[in-house]
Every structure is written in C-alpha cells, then in structure tokens.
Image 1 (cartoon, rainbow, N blue to C red):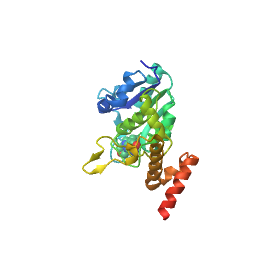
Image 2 (image 1 turned 90 degrees about the horizontal axis):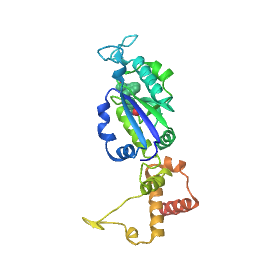
Image 3 (image 1 turned 120 degrees about the horizontal axis):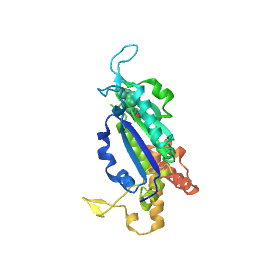
Image 4 (image 1 turned 60 degrees about the vertical axis):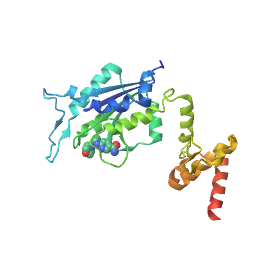
Length: 251
Ligand SMILES: NC(=O)c1ccc(NCc2ccccc2N2CCOCC2)nc1
C-alpha cells in the first residue's frame, strides 16, 4: 500500500456516473494502491426537504431551475468536519479557467480536492462567490452536468501523482510534459498490409532513434500546435533540429 497522496471529494447528483471510469485502469490502480482516495458524495443527502430536491425556481423568473446553495454549503460543512479544510473547492463550469496540463500539475500538488458537479440551468451564484476557490472548464462546450469534466480532471491529475503510473510510464509521461506532442509509436508486425515501420526504429541504433523521435515530436508540434512550440522548453539540440527542418521546408 502506498502512502495516501490525495483525497478527492466529489459532490454530485449522479454518483453512479462515476462507477465505470473510476473502477477501471489507472484510477482504479491508484485507489487500490492507496495513493488516492475518491469519495462520491450525493448532494441530495443534504437536501432541505423530504423530497430530496436540491433545485428551485430562479428569482427574477425565467425558464429552468437553479441549483440551490444550501445543500452545497452543508455538504462542504460535512466534509470539513470529517477531513478539515480542502486545499481547493473546484466548480466545474463552462465559465471556468481552461483546464490543461499545467492546471493538472498545479492541482496534483494539493492533498485534498473537492469537485462540485453542477446541473440544471446553473448554480446559485453564492456558491461561486462564497464557497468555491476555483472555477475550471474542460473546454468551450456546454455539457449537461459537471460530472464528465470532473472525470477528466481526476484522470489527468491522478496520472501526475507519484507512484500512480509505473516507473516507465511516468518517464514516458515526462517526455510529453516538456510541452511537445508525442512522437509516433509502432509495434509488431514490421509490415502490415504493406505499411512498414520506419527503418530507423528497427536499427537498434539508440542515439539515432532518440534523435528521430525528438525530430518527430518537434515536426508534429510545429505542424499542428505551433503555440505549444512557442511555450516549450527547447534545448540547443532542439533548435538545431528545427533549423534543419525549416531549411528542408525551404528547399
Ligand atoms: N466545459 C465545461 O467544463 C462544462 C462544465 C459544466 C457544464 N455544465 C454543468 C454546469 C455547471 C455549472 C454551471 C452551469 C452548468 N451548466 C448546466 C447546463 O447548462 C449549461 C451550464 N458544462 C460544461
């Protein structure tokens, strides 16, 4: 059993949505290794009435329902009594800070995260104003609730927790963490339906293979995500490779 690195409390109306993703692959392993504890908390358990409703009509009129603040504040009180103050209380919402690898790394340093999954037309503003520390969006699209974004955030953050990925995988992750896109991967057979594996990868020449892979990462990043290239930490060798690539493009 590893030492508990992180506790994630997820406030949701649909705990059953998380069964699949959190009982499989790396999140399952992280939980089994005792590195990450994930608690699903049903917001309805903090409803103010016997019908277990947690939404109400909007002040000022309008269509749809609004998620009430009370049950969320009381769920947070309960979390605080059991576990103390969380490092972050994150609301997944379309207006939030755009989630990316950098944000994942920032959250991975916390010991205790609370994720709030909203529904309905929106959430009583007093939650965002007085309860939440961070609003995070996984991209510019509207979803029915915050559950899928919560799964994305938990997956990306869990991978960065020491010990969750095997040694090799985390080393491989390192290469991606330098901000470039991945180089192409190949496995058996050497030729499939006439499509061959690049010769250099069959050569066993490790230095050539390292250079070829780095060149592929740089080429791919230049081609499809030049914005990442601008931000990446490039070595002198990288610059030489890029210069030769640009020379070739000119010729
Ligand atoms: N991009 C994202 O990370 C993302 C996250 C959540 C989300 N929806 C849940 C939600 C949560 C909070 C406030 C409003 C809402 N919405 C309720 C449904 O109507 C739209 C607004 N959608 C997209």
